[in-house]
Picture 1 (spheres, rainbow, N blue to C red):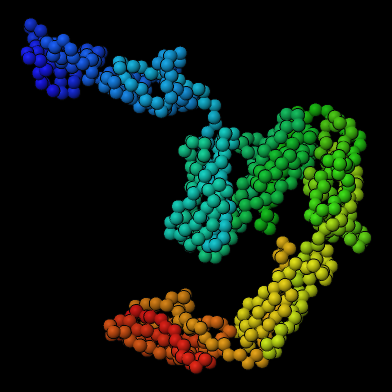
Picture 2 (picture 1 turned 60 degrees about the horizontal axis):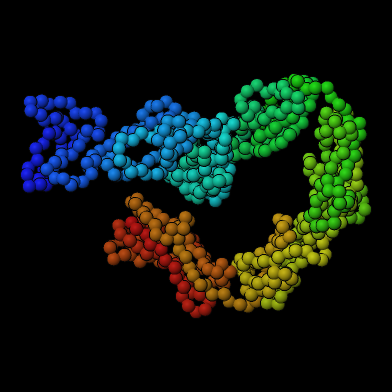
Length: 624
């Protein structure tokens, strides 16, 4: 700073600029020289008349150089004062992951993490050490799903990432509200409409690539149905549909057009032609088939919206070896301790297929139930009747539905070998299939009446005991209460009510019955009168000359003795001079039409003399 530290003024031999850089050396000839490039020459002027002074490096700046150990190229340089700390960082490099910093290029020196800090005491070079990054990152995202969602309903958004072998196919879902609003599950992509208008759905890759895609969705007040127009069946990689390896597989995907069709689901079918293949797995609109024999097969995807639209792809199969045929087949249980019986309610039984020889080329089989006996011992063969006793999955899992027995059959894909096995089913609790309330439909006075319902199980039999039913009543112009277990209805006021019986066993069966109540002699007073427009507004606006607005009066409870049609309408002008008249042409019962006369505000009143001797009033405001 130019202050003299000793008793004698020092004699400078170097000159520095305001940044501390050496700009010239002063000698007897005062010859100016270029500033040295090495920062060790960048010394601060010292008082050389003093024997004791601070470290000669104090205040100097040193160069910290960051280099790439692979290329020796400079990543970054910075100047750091002596003794000060430098904050390190983690650089990035295509196809590599940063490992550490090291004082030696070959990594044999001192290492530092990317978030370390180091104290600088001289010119320093750090080399970035790398590990190979073999991760396949997402480069593109396609959002599939309807471009419409109804307020209060959901729509499934799905994302297809590319390339297909990306290490992570998961995306994070977000939604940005526009003129409308919606919410979305960030993991599942289930979009829920909230208010009508437009929103923007976004899918962002979670692999750190930063890749994202957006889709505009319209939130509508009513359902919008977009029919399937076309289905494209292609390989998942976009290549030619061929299988060339022995027992190889091929992944296919069904693309629905338009991509905002309401129904995006398909049913898959593999039809053997000159060659044969089986279904290895199905996941939504994706299918994997496995080659069996050389030739061609046709893979079809049929829209589930009932349109009958079908897409298909012909797969050519080569490279399959000599087929070892199946000699025999039989059915056993997957668990050696299981028997051919199910005794637990809603129980299952995993069956297994035993094929000889064990080296048979094709061990694929088709499972089915060819007949059943219901709990009455009656043999049935129709699929709908068999399904009342049990079902079987494509993997041989029997699921019990009702009591009885079934005959399971397997047919091999190679040689059409057949085996059958009987399975006994007990202990099943029959669920309710239907409820029919048969009466009564009228009640007189306040004495309780017993509601009657016929309850039918999934086995088509009437359930007389143990039926899981809950009774409820909805008041209309009349009122009543009901015992939720017994169905005993107690009237409380004249009018109509609706009685409902609903299954509580997990099924959706229910029925309703209207009941007319008379003779209770009970007067139900009005608790509230609401005056509003057809859209529910209690404050309306009229901007046209002599314009009109309609109001409707509704009462609570709905079963009050005095009805809304008994109201008397009136208008009171506001203090701002507003005035209006009642238009008789649009006024009837609980509906009134107000016609504007002068600008300002008016209040519309609906008044009724109620059965409890009190006058009940409701009102609304009109701004003219």
